[in-house]
Length: 432
Image 1 (cartoon, helix red, strand yellow):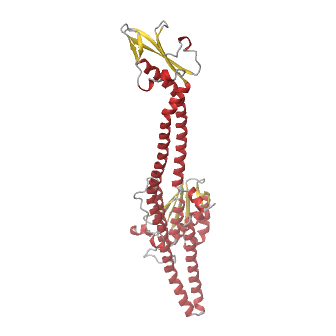
Image 2 (cartoon, helix red, strand yellow):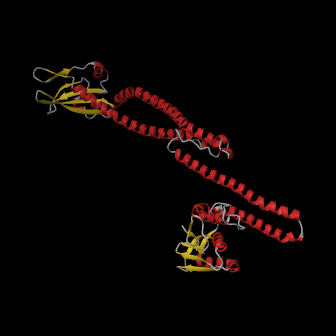
Image 3 (cartoon, helix red, strand yellow):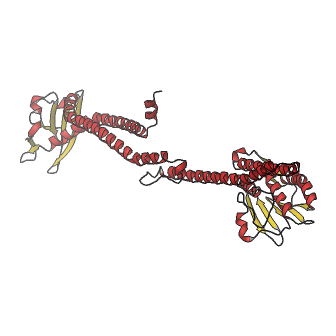
């Protein structure tokens, strides 16, 4: 299909014009039918009018009897010039004819074919007279054609001019309405990575288009926020990886067999950071998840079994409490495993020796509580930030574990919160 045909097929102006022309054609069809029905009835109507007009021209003598016709104007010549097509008579109620045109025979007035015959009652000085007029169909057709031919031409001219005028007005109106949309489209084309803060204006836009522009601006808000987060993430990741790489380089330059163990520790630490960065990138995209029904108790038991060597090494007891062994939720099983593992791992690392870490499974929620020193209240809003670490705590973590938990919760529509207790810290996860 040629490009111009495809463009016209999607053009709002063309669609409105086609709709407008179809509506006009349907209207003309209805008007044509109505006009045809009117013309079929107009002959009889004009014959009735002629009968009433003739009755008004009857002149009476002193005794009150019809004496003649006071016919003026266009009707004066009709009875004499067209005796076979136009005639009249005036009779009393008994049928006695007092006045008639020269060509009309009273006995045959109602017997002539192809004639319009109409009778009206005329009351004069208390006496009722029957005025009968006979007009041929051909005469009425001639009169009707003469009287309507100018009207038909005028009607067609008005219809043609109205179609043209309204079409031009429609095109002008559509182009005027679409001008702000073209302006908004031009603005959208200028938006790029260097101008993500730009937004489309909804001024002078049709009310039907404004929701689309608002939705587009909201999409830009989300894209800008994601782009800024990615930039910040890349900057933080580069900063976090620079230090261990520099240390690793220094240790390699120093050389010596005694550095082997330290080098291996640094490589393990660096590998863990890279792994967490990859995991954070993965859980930030909800399309990577595979939703399924998760048995919470079974999952919690698997996490406890996975972390039991670390807990035994640090002398920490892990206790699992549950309200209902049949509690389920919907989500990605591996993502929830990582979330719960990170929470428990943090709790084990920051709990003192011979203390207890408790997991409570409820209906639609779970909590992880440790017996550590807790988190300062002014630091609570920061614990889920990427690469954030408490200044009072020195450990090998990169500050990504809780950020990963938060991303998983947000992507699933869950609510993850934290609060400081005396003693310890409690993380709560509520399933939506």
